[in-house]
Length: 357
Image (tube, rainbow, N blue to C red):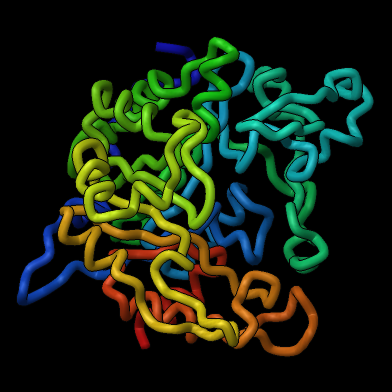
């Protein structure tokens, strides 16, 4: 086992309940509480994937925190939305790293910048994090430079400590990012993910964890390496990078959902696949996706609800500023009303409030 994956006590030690997103079955008398997943932490208020973002999300009542995971040169899992880190760290201001700026093709797109796989964990630990959307989130950008990049082990430790302190389970929803890309570079992420889950005491079907991926093959591979539950992410457009001939639209048909249920326990659709939007830009009621997914035995956890006008349908926008908050409460309540098992939000406090309403 690599040195950055020390053996740890079971994640559930000291918890008062199992708390896994997929651990409890629906019953006629008492359905499990719908989960609020803090998307990259409370990323609407603090730079994403930082200690501050995760702690704030938990303080706001999030049930689960989400670390997107990419690999370092020496094989560590670190919490970054993308392996390109020019926009979320201060690396551009570090003269010593200027020569490592390069261009890579990731999932068919040419990307220029600095990539985690070109740096050791120790090198990445010298960087400081930044807000990814400073124009929309200037209050968050005021916290630029305050945090380091976190490893998955550090995020898991944070969730464990907060669970024990608060007396409630804080789950984890890690996402394996760009497995096909990393595999092509000789860096398979699945065995590293499986080893990390074992090290953190999360290698069981009832652990408070749900491993996500937009690709199909990596989830099937992980199923052979770990007992941890899995979620197939899908989008309203495109298809999985590891299956060029497959569209996500085909995967969310009745037959497609049955196929997903063969290797995953949950579906993570884009929220627009759960609620339709009409020609006037207003919410037009639920699609059949939640009903069909539940019929296939899948939990449904849509992504990602954000409060800013820039991310809301026209009828829910308030004012003309892209960064101003619109009527996100209506969207959140409508999503919960469809019977989803949880949802992802950059604003956990608003999601918790909408669930309570």
